[in-house]
Image 1 (tube, each protein chain N blue to C red):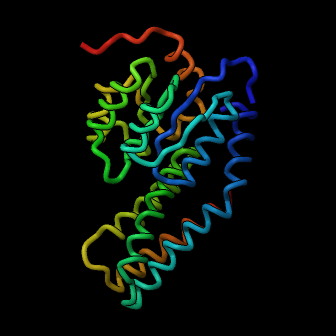
Image 2: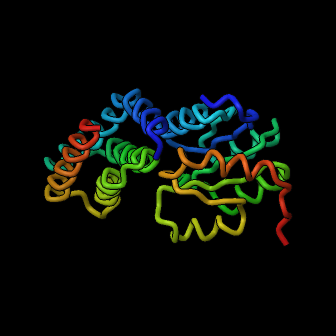
Length: 131
Length: 104
């Protein structure tokens, strides 16, 4: 595990327990504090009402979740947190397009293991509010 | 990818291999049941969830060919009326996925 990084608190929103466990392992290996893992939009909104996070990583393929409502709710509940959408799909999918204007970054799941520095950089800069 | 990162990812992958193959087994069971016309609603839904899970897991670990196989399984499980032909194809895909995952 990397020891030089500030332990950024991460909320992971992922419906698959196995994927969540594996993604958490990747993030922890990279020095992140995966403080909470939830499986759907309502649980994500509840988590951000109850606690603070530096970063929320959100699976874009959550079944039964209104993506726009969830992302806007997360932004409202946690204005200081960076939002990152994560997808197994190709970059041009409809949900990626919906997310792109509402989050700080979109990454492919296959890039998660190589995105540690990107995530840290996102968290180290002031967020520019959306206009 | 650095050797360190490669090794870390492989270790995480190996640590979850049994759980991953258990997901494949559920897709295989659905294929078998579909082939013989005995696919119940519950198993069908469960297998669809498992195929979806496998797409994400395989993609996360940089295994696009495996993710594509899992996606083909999911598409078959989402496609209209399950029949023996779909079941045979699903079973083949799930076996291919098992073999590929087992190889690491």
